[in-house]
Every structure is written in structure tokens, then in C-alpha cells.
Length: 391
Ligand code: PMP
Image (cartoon, rainbow, N blue to C red; front, side, top):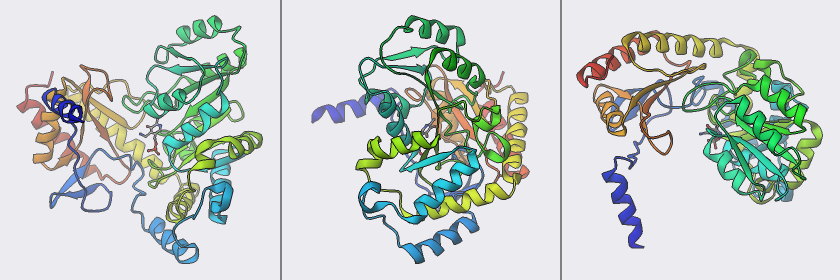
């Protein structure tokens, strides 16, 4: 086992060893780390729901009624009425016929991709920048994976043509919002291509749930493509502020996944506190788009101010705001200096992003006040100047 220590040491030497900070408070605009209150600019708590009083209250109510654990996998004894209640609510919210709930967004990809295209004669078309959980889900299928250049429709079209005569099923999977750059998949064009080539379309809307579309109804709603995307995979761990994954689509798709998807058959159901908290989160989103609007206002403000200072904020189309610094060592030093100044914003380095594009990925939330964001901008400016990184 000596290789473990050697590899870890090499990662440390290469600046690729991640140090993980511990939060001593609930998630929120401000969190406590090492006894200090710091501004939180790196969680996916887009709407501030992680610790919302209504979410907490509903969780307590359901725990009193149903306890905590599901006791089994869904198919044996683990399906409880709150699971079905949440599935119905999520499907209605998204305008889909049905939805199946699994344990996480990661599991939702594992539940969907290898289940729909399992065989060696099948083909899986995958955007080059897809999330790690999609890459791993593809590995659980025997189908060859055909990677197309990121959001490059010409390359995709050429690859679809090349595999036109493949004998099995064809499936295309793409992130909806690309998590490290914040750009949005060219879904209307992808839908057209999939329809023309008889390809099953799966969109992972992890960063679009609760963010894109009317009142946060997701990427399919954003583009008005209801009924034309076969599977909307999503996570409840980001804007919804809790945990859990879903796959939404037609009733027959969901019926099939219930019978065949291995995370549903062989891993226990989501816990009652998760389900109850998610129910409250959907209710909050159904009632008002106020939080979603505030999130976008905050995102626009921060992006405008940071790029006016001379930072490279990439080409994000969503509230995700990358501040691209280049070298991993610069990003790590920048993050450490921000922390000294009262800001928690993790450096993102290879292998999460390509080498030479290390960054601070700034994640705003509806929970941030304008004053919080001004403090962020001022602090980024002073650290940027101190390190000589401003253009
Ligand atoms: N898909 C994408 C595109 C993601 O960004 C993430 C979260 N990092 C996931 C899936 C996994 O979601 P979860 O954290 O709910 O497992």
C-alpha cells in the first residue's frame, strides 16, 4: 500500500492535493469556519434553501410522522407515501408526466444512462465537458462512448452521421448547465439532431433545477421543449438545498426505470428528512419566483463588477461566475488570501478543470445581500492587485 502515500505526496508537490475546510454552522450566505464568520461564495445553495425555516419545519413535522429511515430499497419495502408525494410534485413542477426519485444526482445518472443504453451494439454520444457522474455512468454500459467537442454542433452532427448504421439504441447525454463555466447546452439544436437521428436524449439539469426556466422549472422549461427531451436528470442538492436525484419524463420511461434502474433496485430509498425538506423546497418555488429572480440579479451584479475590475469571468450564461486565474498555484494562493480576508471561495484546479484554467468559481446565492457582494468585489480587487493578477 506504499503507493497511496507516494501518490498523495506527488499530489501535494504538484499543488493538486485538496484541503477540505469544515463548516461549523448551517449553510448560508455566511458560515463559520475555524471559529470565524466568513462570506460563503462556493456552495451550490443557489436559493438559500439549505437552512430555510419552512424547510426545517416541514422536516421536523415529517420526522415526527414517519421517522427517519426508509428501511429498505424502494422495491422491497422502502417506498413510503412521502416518496410518491415528492415524485408527483416534482413531475408537476417540471411539466413532465412522471418522475422517479433516487438518492442523489450522481445516482440519477447511474440510474438512467446504462439502463437505457446498456449493450455493446448501442452508442452513447457525450459532450466532452460532461460531469464526472455522467462519465462514470457511461462506463457502466457496454456501449462505446462517442465524445463530441464541447457544444460543437458540427462535430456532433458528423459523429451522429458516422454512427448512423450502428445496430443498437443511440443515446445522447449532455449537462444542461456546464458546472465549471456556467454555459448552457444548445438544447434546441440538440433536440433537432436527436429527433432527426432517432437518438434518446438525456439532459443532466443539475445546475438548471431551480435556476433556469420559469420560477426555476429547469432547462426544458427555459427553452420551451416540453415533451421533446426524453429524460431530464436532476439533483435536489443544489438549488433545492437538500439531497436527492430525479429522472423525469414520460410515464412509461419512469415505469421502466422503476423496474430496471440499479440504484432503485439495489440501494435504499432516500431518507424521510431529505424527502420532507424537498417537499417544502418545491412548495416555496411553486408559490413565488422571488428567490430565483434575486439569484439572477445577484449573479449579474457580481459578474459585471468582477469583469469591470479586469478579471477573466469566462463566458457564463448563468449565475455561476468563474474567475479564471490560470495556474493552480495562483488559484490556491488567491483562495487562501480571500480566506484571510473573510471569504470562503475554494480554488478549482485540474482534474476538475483543464490544466492552465485553474479558477475560483464564485457561486452566488439569493441569500447574499448587495452589501455581501460589494464586500466580495472589494476583497477580490485587493487580492487581485496584491498578486498582480489584474489586467
Ligand atoms: N451532475 C452534475 C452536472 C453536477 O454538477 C453534479 C454535482 N456536482 C451532479 C450531477 C451530482 O449531483 P449530486 O451532488 O446530487 O450527487
